[in-house]
Image 1: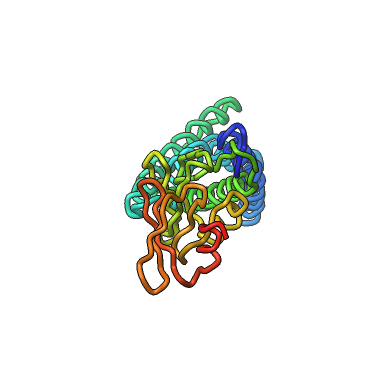
Image 2 (image 1 turned 45 degrees about the vertical axis):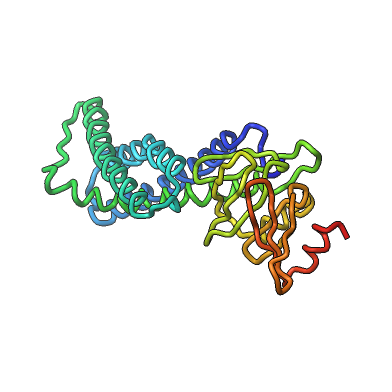
Length: 274
């Protein structure tokens, strides 16, 4: 299978989540430690227990809510088009994350301080919440970017090694969706900006963020030939070559027509079998 984990992207998602979770735990622990020492420096007579409880409740609540940005990035990658819609949805999730985080750590502080027989007063929401939301916004963006980069890296590695053989498949990562297509059913691939459009035998045209040069390296052993700076075709599925003058040709692959430029004479020789 070209690029694929037999379990699909689920195992990759789990690995990415646990790697990011471990990283988040380390970051939160470091931030809380710095905050505690800063607080003690600013208020030398402050209660160490009170400071530690206050900071720990905030950090623990943030870690408990990591599933929110994780699910958001898994189902709505940051490069999903249209970009304005993607960013708007993530902004709404960010606000929800901030509200739940603040409500969570305030409730947790009440419970912990009550266990010590003490009361807790956070302050006026209208005064405190905007400040907390700004901090949560920065943390949320950092978490999202971390999740996205780690997941992209792991998925890229999982889909980078081709498997030879007649039953080989290729994993096309179309946003958060994975399309596992038999290599024989991929008729051609065309460039679409920063994406590659796969033309499948059943008429589907999934998009994948990848360059034609990288796909040519990964699929070259499966008989794919570069016929144009914007096209890669499956030589085994070519049914017709039609001259168009000046050395150019039109290639027919089922219901797909692709160009063959005179600047790719090696491709013409391969498709002619000579």
